[in-house]
Length: 150
Image (cartoon, rainbow, N blue to C red):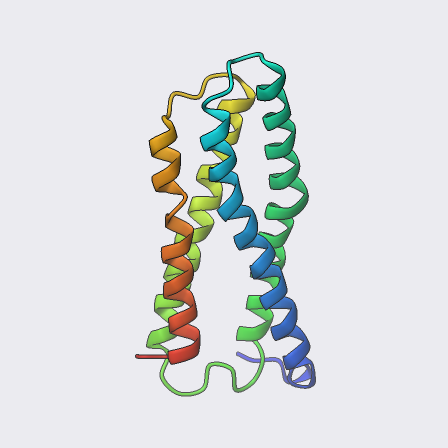
């Protein structure tokens, strides 16, 4: 199913999708890095409380709205005539990677709650490794969209 009225807006929707995706990725790159530093702050310290504010604001004011916008504009792109013309194997791989990225977003949200409640049990090393997940998923997504190997 496509919506013909979206065709003239294709480039605007695509641009909005890319901008929102960049903002979402920026948040997903930065949050785990904040958690690495937050691990070193003593519980209840001024530094720990500052990290809590930074993490909350980044997630609520930038990362989550960008996630919602990315999905919204992505759905509009799929509904635009001609966008999914031809083979769709690349799209299925991209969609799986985006679903995994959305799951990662949920994980960083849960980790933030742990920090907010002073009950984080994960190590700096854990967050350093987790920080690589969005990079790998972004690489898969970009290759699928640009190269369309399947």
